[in-house]
View (cartoon, rainbow, N blue to C red):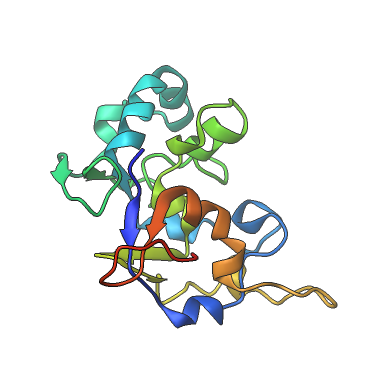
Length: 187
């Protein structure tokens, strides 16, 4: 799988407190507010969603075809060279892939509980609150107040930076190269 090329990492990623404990899905004040925006789903993930449609559709109460607000858009900034934007449901103002009536995402659930490949979780959701655009990696801002990386750190706990806590996902999805010379650099 071809990765997204990153040539610049915003220094703020090394300063922002990261996601501690189990991140977003652990004990958190987060109310899935980032799901109010929907997300962009790359071509590789779209194919996995289609493959698992019979399991996903009952979780979201909709047909996969009705979960998108755009057609496929070509863009090399996405794995597979294209993406689609998800729709946001009017009933609860959540991404069309959000679980009905409870916290969490059907796509994350497919990976964590039903053992689908992790690529079924959209790139932006796997690295949130980090995002990217045209070779630059940075914090998606403004961060919502209940975001796990803005919560009070438990007493005595030392929390690494956002870049450190998201490093495994970043390395799985992005290729970090030096500007101008094409050499791989540490992400």
